[in-house]
Length: 471
Image 1 (tube, rainbow, N blue to C red):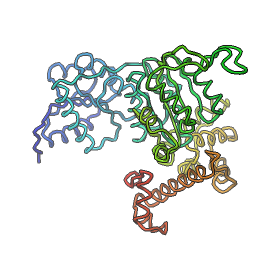
Image 2 (image 1 turned 60 degrees about the vertical axis):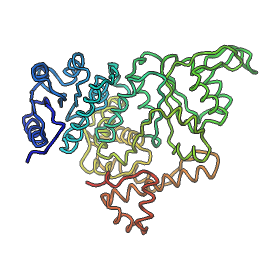
Image 3 (image 1 turned 120 degrees about the vertical axis):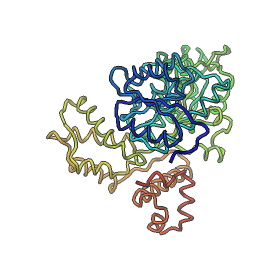
Image 4 (image 1 turned 90 degrees about the horizontal axis):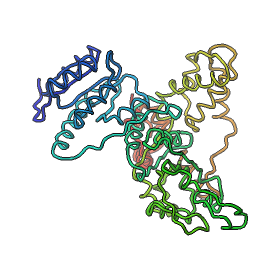
């Protein structure tokens, strides 16, 4: 039965798969829309000029003219037309390019019917709003630098890729905050934003806010004039100045002292600074990207981090999920690292046994992607044949789980370190129980000898949703 739809639209669907075209026809017809089809990019451009669709769903991999190139050409003539890119192979590269080239949305196959309906409704509303007078910001088109590619095809990583694409089109005064546990790839996200921005040829300058005492860190950031202090024999340029119009990446920003937090706030507000011992104002032209593995909202509430600085940095936030929450990406990551270390170590290992891959997917990875990479590097080095077997990695995993374990000490203050470890334990415990019980909160709470109310309160504390574990 056809649904009533006061917002009926002409929808162009471009794909060389007849099954996909049939599915779209059925869904769109049921919802009261008119479906126009094309089987490659060239046909899409022809249908566009003759049929004037209200929105477009378009595959990337097609004969004659692929979806990304067709998207570019469509946007040159129809900048306000919503184009939803669909693909069966969702990489960081394609997601970023799609967003930068003006895609309204980016979906990966297999496609969900309700998601198609939701995106269609949103695209129609957006087109009407824009037609009413809102201007569209032209997306900057940049070549991709694969050196800093993140690896993963799961839904959580697709959201990260789309956000990178959006951020990279914004001006430098848009600050970015990246959150996530150690080893999830926060610096890779920062480098991907830089590499895909208009100022990609400018310097990327990173500094870890935990590695230097306050006095040295201040001189590293701001630079100093000759004679500014004992030992300052020559002028030294600071990171803010060296970055120019590029990117300044401040890792573990929460560890900045109150004094440096105040000085950084002034730089972000005024967009200028002075070298230590100097009087000349220097313009800060770079983009500031900050990262932390701690709960920065909690640190603000406790008074450990300035609220005004948090809001200055938190213009755009992206959160990197831990590896245990995106286990569908483990085979892809494992094979990526296998290829990398085959090349580095001059080996020719072809893959993993089924038992080895099952073992890799069953582990919780407290060290996240970095730990998986180290594990694969060791396995490639030790493997004598052409396949990595379970025994090659089992000993290392058992040592990590059962053997002596060094807990992460994030602060010399006992209460802070203890709180961080307890938070990490609680979050990991919840994830493992929900994974084991496939998102059934009642069953997970019962197995944990907890009331459902208390178990759910902990889930709320860490923003963990049961839906993500149902399969």
